[in-house]
Image 1 (cartoon, rainbow, N blue to C red):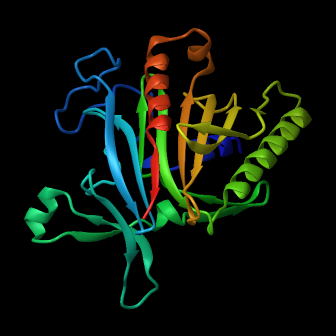
Image 2 (image 1 turned 120 degrees about the vertical axis):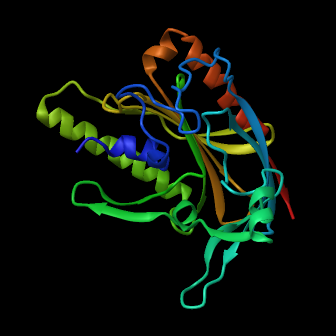
Length: 269
């Protein structure tokens, strides 16, 4: 089963769709999505202001464009408020406030929206690779230059250390299996690095897998948020051939991803 690296790389993107397999249509217009950032639907950045459970304020950017889904769907980008959603018959779950103007206009007030699968994730297991947690993302998109996703996770469900160790173990097992089969497939994973960008201390991961279609190379930036239980996880997957050739589409998305990393500003409330 060779899907595991792709699973970890593209976690949360199943709701977005898959690249390839024919022309993708914009549901709103019925027309094909643009295949190039140089088309009229130029990709850019949108900025978000996030209140993280009244503990931290996090400002950051993410991709913006007609064929890009907004982060924190239903929330006002300038006032994203995470909270615990209360229930009568079951424990409270992490979520956020649907306070976008059109939603408030229809409902008369904002609504609570659960985000358990983004923060807590779903526990998975099999006999070959053991236990892990699969998380949904708050935003994730395929572009001509690569696939990008952004999520927020609760380290009490799956810590940064567990995330790194799982990737390491899976790479080792994958390569051992491929050697035993006599194939030439090999995954490559560089040791995790601590990187400071714009005053923020990130954990940076870089790996390659020959079995991930459309994104055989990936980079992940993980940002723990102060002394809270939460961390942001930004992933960028792309074709190694596009990187080697300095492909224009790849360079465009690479530049935007770098801007996203540098956009983060964290303040304790």
